[in-house]
Length: 512
Image (cartoon, rainbow, N blue to C red; front, side, top):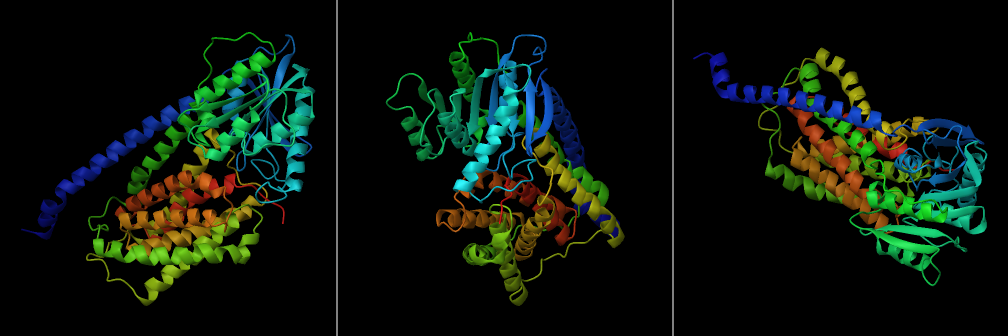
């Protein structure tokens, strides 16, 4: 029997399975892309949208479809939280416009499309408070001057940092007739007369305590509602949140309650999620096309490598989590990003140093590689595909994700740090997916521990869940790319893009 016949006997079933995967992933990607496109195309309903910049503050206007020519309507300014943006709060614009309100959503300094830096990296100083109040005043003044808005009927809605800002503003400006504070982190010196506080059932206890204190010992002008089954981020997409807000505002302005169904606050995020799934799954057919099909001798799970990976990664990242606090990178003009760069660079370098001086035995079967020329052509296409995979759904359905201003040079720096960590973890585990997952899990644990210990902003704890999901996706993509025998540096660079683009897009720019 010839060698070709032996290969056919040995690998024939695998080839058929791989081709089945190719067909299946292609179909899933196309269906998910179609679904995501339909959901995103219908988001916002028939409302009219307009983007303006006033006094350096980016503003998104949302007008009900029948606002022209009729009586003036109440207006609402919607304020996002720390590391948020106007686009993140877009579902509130959809809900309020469908309920007959004219809406303005703003990007605070350092956030979203706003290139002006926030004065500090935690929005906790008097300078930051003044800056947020200034930006809010710009948005309110603009809203009151719109021709279809009744300037005497203005309300504010804010989340987290934005909840603090709107509550503080409304407490000293009687022109604000109603305020909705979602996940309010603390009480201002003076509370507004009409205030609804909303808090997620799964949020940290301190948020519920603040909500209860805000509604304590006063008349029915102030109230608190616990939204079941949600935490600090998912409360933004809970239908209960939107219904409570609309009901409170209707009562505040003496408007009749409506039984009409509200637009789903999940439509945008569901569309973005479907589009993300399409692009993630689409890596398999794209990789097949560019790198020439699945290799038979791809990395396999080896328990001995996993046993070796855990203590080395844990020690490296523990040291990195402490030293990152005092590295020069901590002075980068973006909140938390400098610490992340220090953590990933030190942790990755320590793992690479260990791997260099105490290398593991080589894999049992060295993986064959696509031709050098083919890899050179595939690399820039795959890197571009990785950028589109994370940036497009993020920007269309979740938050502002276009790198502007200082983000243009900060993104490559953060990317390089995470790429180094991914490359080191891949070498240490010899490309075994469980090993890559372990390194990611240890990195998340180290970052969480640093936040608890006060080495980095406590805000990190709130973003650990989405960061863990991104690192899980990174490990899954690494497994797929190893199956195509992609070079290790390309695997690390592509996976790091998935993680760092949302970080660089969301974390605010800060003054130094």
